[in-house]
Length: 231
Image (cartoon, rainbow, N blue to C red; front, side, top):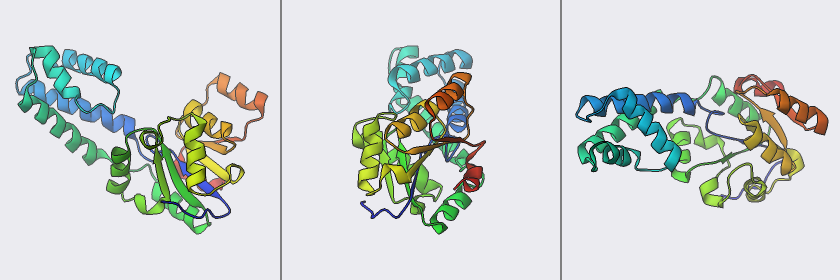
């Protein structure tokens, strides 16, 4: 969806910026492994989880058949019952825990009231990222949602930022990127000519030195709930 950009725009990362993806994913994976071990996977739960983490590392978190690979490695063949049990448990737990960080909705409302155009720039699968926003009822706030799958480039590559700016008809010097990863969200945005706001994260000593040495336009906040103090 192309929109006419107003005088200023804010782009958000999604995972671990708007919502705590990492924590709920780990809890959901543990619950799923516990369930399939209790229902017949012939291996100790801790060992099964270690194998599962290896599979995620090998295949990537967006791979759709982690449980297929797990059952095949443990018992030598795919087990449809255990695979379905693992997937169902994972998704049920994940979505029961899914919620935005405190004041996220208030911040989005505030930005809209201040006249900002709002977009999302996120690495990941398009359907999965939209699903998170829709389940949390955050999607009405966003003028565009651009994913690495759609563009063919992941952050911090400048092309994904440039494409987002193009689609929203915004100039980089009037645009701000809010994200939780300095090297991915912030440096990528800075290289595309945007400003950066780092939230839900802490800078390393090397990153602090880099900001000072290169005089980067970066604001560091404790969490997303403080964004209205600087915009």
